[in-house]
Length: 99
Image (cartoon, rainbow, N blue to C red):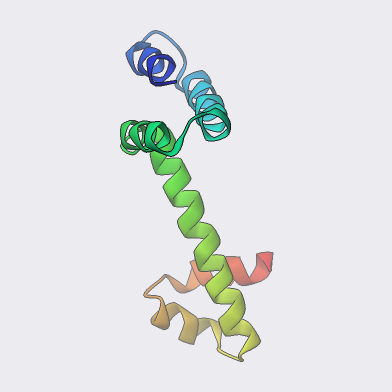
């Protein structure tokens, strides 16, 4: 898996969107087939890539949505939640609309 990942890092003449998709497939396959030590090595390689950033951002976004949902259920206002999580009020409003 590391060798496949290295190929994507060196592919400069391929569209970035295609590379991102290939990296995602490599990560999915790695999760299925690698042991924990190998997975940790791949994770370290991926951490600073576009895919790594996307995975991190997706996870952070999902966590924020979960936290906002809990605060809404407890009766907090959008403004209160924005202050509590130090987030722009518009971002919280969008999350509330999605919920």
